[in-house]
Image (cartoon, rainbow, N blue to C red; front, side, top):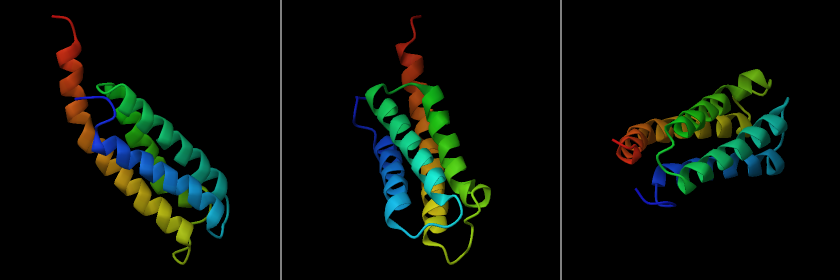
Length: 118
């Protein structure tokens, strides 16, 4: 697995970027702006870390957890109104981030095992 080549991590970076941008360009409800901005930036950072250093299994789990936080953020931040575009961005983006992180865990574990000294 080469650096900067894993599609799963690029998708996570994209989800984080969309969440962070939507925090500014979509009509806000409740505490959607800080939730989406903070989780979006953290997803970008986790994705870039995974791209730069593939095989860090713990960071894959961090990325998965951030996706889960983005998914539940509408309820935590008080913007879970079904008519809210920001809620849908959080739900869909969070689900996508969780799925791609789950898909990336096994390859990261495999690469991590190959890099350990025997």
